[in-house]
Amino acid sequence: MKRLSLLFAMFAFLAGNVFAQTVLIDDDMEAYTVGNKIAAEAQAAGNDYWTTWSNAPGGAEDGVVAELAGTKCGHMTYGNDQVLLLGGMESSHYEVELDMYVPTGKDAYNNLLHIFNGSGSQWATEVYFNHSTNGTKIQVGGVDHTFTFPFDTWFTVKYDIDLDSDVATFFVDGTEIVTWQFSLQASGGAGQRKLDAIDFYPPSSAAVSEYYVDNIKLTLIGGVSVPHLAIAPDAVEETVEEDDATTVDITIANTGTAMGDWHAWVDFGEGGAGSQTAELKYHDGEAYSGIGSSGGPYTREMAIRLPGSAYGSSAMGMKVTKMKFLTSAQYTSADNTYVFRIYGEGFYNQPGEKLAETSITSSALGTWLEATFTEDVYMTGQTMWATVGLMQNAGEYPLTMDGGEYGEEADGNWLSTQGGSFDHCYSAGSFGGAWLITVECQGSLIPGSWASLSAIEGSVAGGATETVVLTLNSIGLNNNSTYEATLFVRTNDEDLEEVQIPVTLHVGEVGVIETSANAFKVYPNPTTGMITVEGENINAIAIYSAAGQLINVVRDNKVDMSAFGAGVYFFNIIDNANNTTIQRVVVK
Image 1 (cartoon, rainbow, N blue to C red):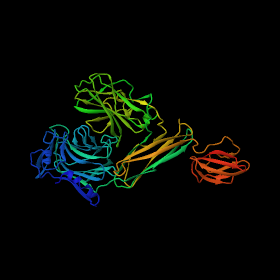
Image 2: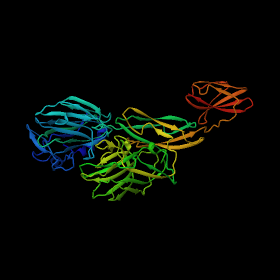
Image 3: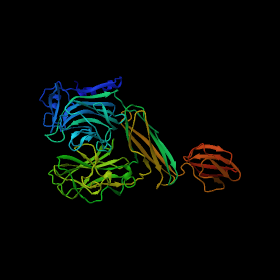
Image 4: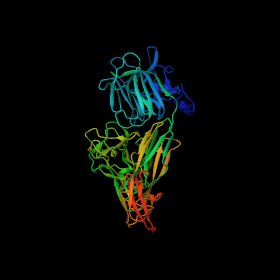
């Protein structure tokens, strides 16, 4: 058996060669010594894919190598929490297969993890075998699916996971139980499309929890796949009338074989120095109570997420100056350090790059703490994350929430535990609401609502194309003015990690000025095609686009506009004396 890390080094070779299947892990445990700990034995043999939930091989969480019916296998009993690392795969197609043996009257459990990080892990599946409360079922995407299995004999469990299609299927002894969207979390809600580990955990008690595992395989099906993305157009320039709007299609095409992930925002730039201020928050200013748990110690990081749409009209272009957090009146920990951070936008509905950080140590309870940043962080359009981190010991309740309705203000209550992914946090009771976190900004407010995207992140399957709509509107903008921004698109394509697309909006009659004189009648206006121009001594009609480009000249009072498409045009009507009259025409 080879180390998993060495097998990963072969991926570049595999990508250029056609293999139907490549076995990455194949562990029948025959090389291990009966009675010894599984992860300790495996790592001593160079198989670094076995560990435990707390990364403590050889300890109480580590199962025992046993012999059953003439074959060596892993014996799991209550208190064990065995983890098989699967490499954190984010693309390609895999099978995870293992044999299980559950004695009569006993129960068993395993789960697949999108992210393995102890209590900060993210569950892709939860599978129960003869559990007194949950019965025999697999939970995926928030939905339970029951199945049957035999006691006192070996049976096979298999997961078929196609990360490129984001589809997985669960089998028991060759019978398909369920197919689902793999990136969904087991309990429901969006998760990460990642295959990180499988966890074996006897779930109930020493009296009833016991099972065996053997012949564990991780197989790569069909070779390594990669995304290859192309984004168009490379620039956007549009003209709209006052208090009007237009749309532009942004296409993201994937000619690769792996899923292409992207996230995007419109960046409006920095507003510079100024005295304007803004407070960004979701809470109502009053704490309902502290939230915590009986477990611990845990590192906790509370977060509010601020999409560009949340601050476009109030803080666009301003600099972040402070963050505030209301401490819990129920927090009695000796570790009174609060870490304030600002992150930029990242993949998979998660924070990206850390932009600023500062810490405060305080034993004050029920008090607003103010943290000042020395780093220059500006609210320019990307989704920003403002977080407060602390240590929660067992039985402490340091996380302050305002007690709004369950599910209210979803961007105001993200939580990460033990450095894991951020997920929505609601209390165990009937209330929810938002964390008591406020972001203070100061500077010059700039227009930040004139450009918006129909989606700010997504995934494009191999061979597919996704269209994102960029909407440009002139509401509240100055007429006869030009506004500029940059559309940022970041991807998981190593050859196209970031694209910057200039966006220019002209408001009003830029390039063509409509005269006030009106000696001619133009109708119907708006039109779907044919326009009639009534008046005397018409010599010619020059037709301009809204951007001022000459597109046609006619010498008739009947003008067919159907060939030019919907939009705003200008007719420069020239009479026999070379006098001109400019009329605005709208084609539906």
